[in-house]
Image 1 (cartoon, helix red, strand yellow):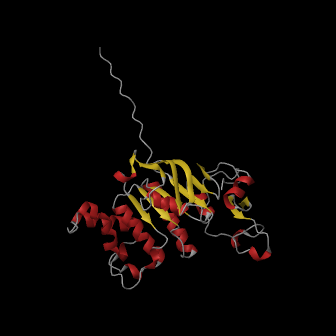
Image 2: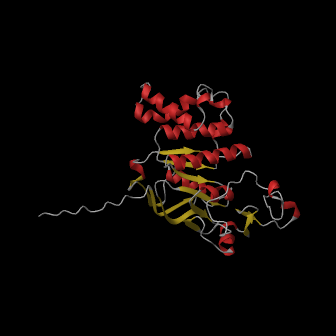
Image 3: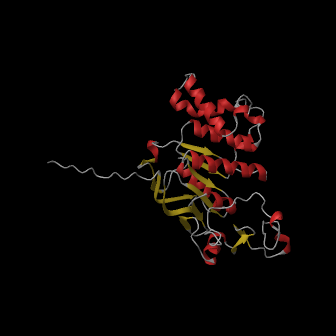
Length: 302
């Protein structure tokens, strides 16, 4: 009797970064960092200004080339483009009246690698566009010019473009910059839904620690001298936060068990920095979404 044993094949991570280094004009920004991103992850990227958050995204999508190290997508070098990546910049909401493209034209443009140069989209391509716009609740705007939309609506259009192109990885650089809190909350809710319903892998740069800890399952933390990569809800001491942000961070629970992290207000004049100690729940962060962590934990890692 012949017996054959099939060797178990281990699927490579969607993204793997090995010993990555990059700098501008001899100033080192990213210093020999290593991490992996698995399919279906929602990764929040946080840290102070100038610590390398946006630079990392540009390296991941190929806009910048590393000084050393390598980036692998599904086990292959970044240059082979085995994984489709959608990118949403914080500068999207700058279209003016001279830019004539409609919403559906913006979305279908993401399909031209499939359509072919100088060819017209087929019915199947327009179906992909319709489905993608429906997923971001923008179907009613498909014939509108992109410059007529609000910043939040424009962000949704470019998310739809990534969905239509069947991107496996969606990279967003502070997508809620310049939008009001209501629109911000709606956009983050949309990202969470796409992550859970479509298993869309998301890498999100944000200054809003509360949103990141509520939505993401993993954190990449850029400090002024350190890079930290860990799962959510790992406890860290005060020294961790001090190294990361250059000032004290405190964690506390709002009424109802909602976890939150804020910068310590040292002066009365700093109360506009979302420091909510000792205030009524109704006056503090009304759009905050309760995280998955247990209330007993009482704090997040950053």
